Amino acid sequence: MIEQMENPFKFGSVVDGEYFAGRRDELPHVKQTLSSRNHLVLISPRHYGKKSLVQKAVNETSRTAVFVNVQAAACASDLARLLLNRFLEVHPWERIKDGLKRFRASPTFTYNPGTDKMEASFRSSEDGSLLLEDVLNLMNEKSDPGNRLIVILEEFQDIADYAPGTDKLLRAVMQMHENVNYVFLGSGESKMRALFEDIRSPFFRFGALMHLGRIPYDDFCRFLSERLAPLCGSRSEEFARQILDLSKCQPFYTQQLAAGFWDLYERIGKKAAVQSAAEAIIRSVSPGYAFLWTKLSMPQRIALQYIARGDKLQDIDAFPMSTVYSAVGRMKKDGLIVREEDYEFEDPFFGLWIRAL
Image (cartoon, rainbow, N blue to C red; front, top):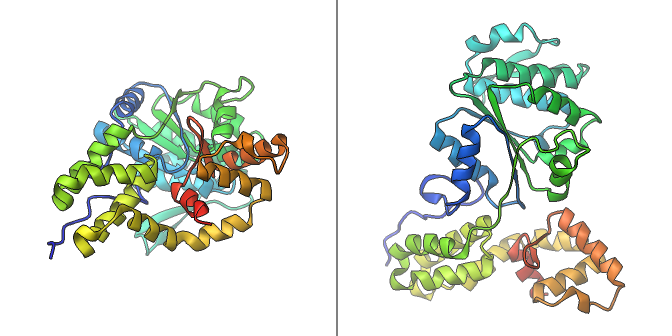
């Protein structure tokens, strides 16, 4: 009977400390940018660890930071509310109450017993642009010049879905701020490129642009082997390579599979297999995959089957190539597939599920 040990793998939330894997080259670059008066634009597919990377940089620089997910807000006024509430978490009421008097629309504060915190809200009739401008200006005003505030806006590509002109307003306000570093995280590559690389966009070249790729194979293999060694001994590297062969070095899914394999090995010992752990994960999410499959068009399904088998899309003869590439483009935009050296699944387990059909 193997003595139970704490699972050394973590997924589904921000990872730091001993759970943080790789990023030896990227972390110094992020820290250097944040130590300057420049802003950072970080683009990658979902589940590549953008937020974890920035959080680690924030922790190692001992800076105050505010994280807000743009997708969690429906409009500019909602985003203003989220920003103000996150700011209240890091700056006491006493320090900012005088600045609130200059707001053109006064927020309402209520006590939330569930969180034991004061929470701000605005009337739905208020002008969202004015609210957003006032909140951002307050954050800059109250930020300590010696410890500039870092504002991280996740899934920033969704700002394009807000009311027309919101991007222009944000750029006009943010460019005047000396006491804030802005970090823009985005998983919608085409939208993020349009925002920061199109000369017609208000955010054109507003920050240092960084594309986050997968963690290099050797780095990830070393990370996995070291953590599997207490459980698997001399076979730890062998199992690490099997995990990476299935997870394709995608951070979230690699940690998920490693965690599942660890739990399986603790239960049944040397009979455990990485493939069995992967199959258990696939079974647990199979209903979601099946639902997603029903929403796809026939050209999309066929293209995914070819990608899952490692076949060339050019060999598809059931539809014109223009139809195939249109289907592929839509799936890339929706985040189902990513383009590395070739098209691959954002979720490698979805690819394994398709191969088993």
